[in-house]
Image (cartoon, rainbow, N blue to C red):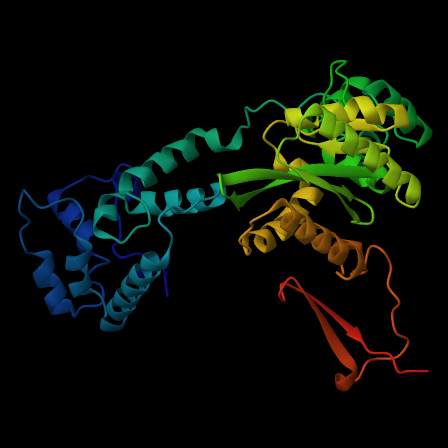
Length: 410
């Protein structure tokens, strides 16, 4: 197949003509139709060549008119490619990214049939194709005017990880971190370390910062206690009276100490509960206390004046942040449904309920946070229990249940 069969219609321009050849109406007519009619019989070809042309006829014949003069097989191929392009174009995304090479190929091929671009199926508009050709001709695609990036090379990810680790574990400033990095073979400027700390959320600029709250709880788990009130309303002949029940909880073992119940948590009563708590610590040295966490309830302020003589420091949670005292709040969530189940008619009743809950919590309830063990210890059996050996101990009307294995008599 020759080159002329690869285009829908042969394109002629004055540059194809021989030099110094006279231009006549007949030569122009022959130039327009010579290739388009070369497959026709000689008689029909001469008849078409002698057909007069109208003044309003365009210089090039439309593609649809040209298909009448092409072989039947070639017309079918053109129709097939037109349908194929239409189907593929419908499956393409709305926006297609073209590379410089793609634009150059489309621009060169489109310029050859620029008068017929509107009659073909295109991925872009004819105006875009012609603009690509002008840009290709002017060479704007082959010049990179962007300035090369200058400056220091980026810091390695390993150095960034070490900087973050040192700042998290040792609470060091960027000058101290620079010295530690030098010992580890990383030479990083102080300003670069400062930038890395700022990007990772560490305070800089001489600001002092301490441990995060979660880190403080984790590090001091075994020497930290928490306390809080849980309120209950009892029915009396004079009406409802609100009672305040004070609990202490050890973070490390989840052990609970029930301090007492009162309808008026005044300064004198709070100081007495602080002394009782101090004596409880002396009786149980396995649960030391260095920090006591509680909320900003004004009734608990006297605890500080009594416990500081025992070397215990009180730590206040942020305002309106119960999740900062999560361990004791979780225990209060365990107590509240049980207390609300009862109709309370006296202070002695709520005291017995609170003591029973504290005893069950310490001696019979496994805790997932400490590996599903019991805080006060438990005599675990050496062999698995059989179904007939399992017994259940119910407390508070079945609200608290303790399952154990009945031991055989010796």
